Image (cartoon, rainbow, N blue to C red; front, side):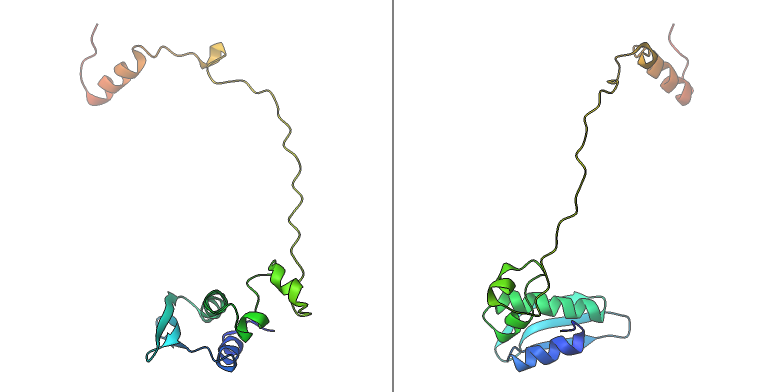
Length: 138
């Protein structure tokens, strides 16, 4: 099934789940699950129709897990319930990427070589006083 906004709204309607989608000219989309008579169970402001569709899908499944809608739109591609239900349309579980192991190496630790050495007792004070225009102490 496609996850466009029209499909999501039609499937919510067919599953008897109430909701609202409102938009303004400046790209603000308001989405709600529920209705004014029985109360809204959740609502959000999103930036696009695709975000509105995804928000409606995710929150309808979360709030109505036993609904027909939740059977058609599993929580994610890795939802084990989709496999148990035998839903042929459920996507295959995603395989995590193979990451090569990190091989430890010996690196020079900070301040363990002479080239790291600085005279910290006076150099920072002299530089600070010079920057402030104050004469340096002798």
